[in-house]
Amino acid sequence: MTWTAPEVERPDGSLVAPERELLAGWLDFYRATLLHKCSGLAAEQLAQRPSPPSNLSLLGLIRHLTKVERIWFRILFTPDDPAEPVFDPSLGKDADFELIDAGRAQAEYEGLIAEWELSDKAAAGRSLDDRFMIRDEESSLRMIYLHLIGEYARHCGHADLLREHLDGVTGV
Image (cartoon, rainbow, N blue to C red; front, side, top):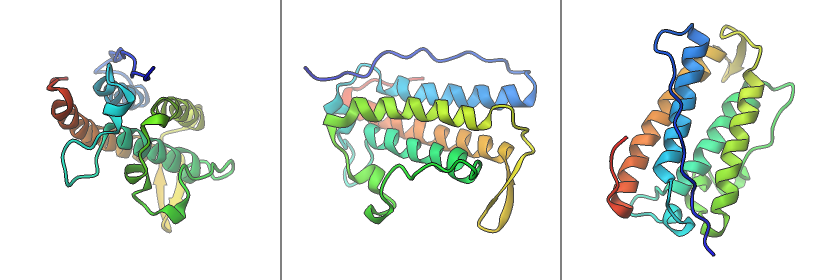
């Protein structure tokens, strides 16, 4: 029996909340939106690359955003408890898009959700002004939230197009 991505409810959030709640809420909305774009698709569909010559697939986006979450929250922001890279760096920077295996779709999907929990834990109790270094420049937790919201929003647009190519489903 083939695994199918489950239905996902996207959270409603305040539009006037304090900054921290607002940023976390938008990130959670886009996280859920990515999974919403995958809802009801079989593992094989998630692994398909429906728009050649692009290497994009929904499963590739899941893998990529798992990597992005880990890099920003757990490798860069909390280096006192460093996480291992998601993919072997020797495989190249596009391994998350290239090495797609439908047989691993459920594990990859669940891995993304687990990474969200670890990301949220890394940020818990920290100030948006807490600093870290990236490429010899100072950055903040606030910037991570803004960067990830933009990253997810961009990739949710990709996911919408991929989904339309797969089965014609469109919309938010």
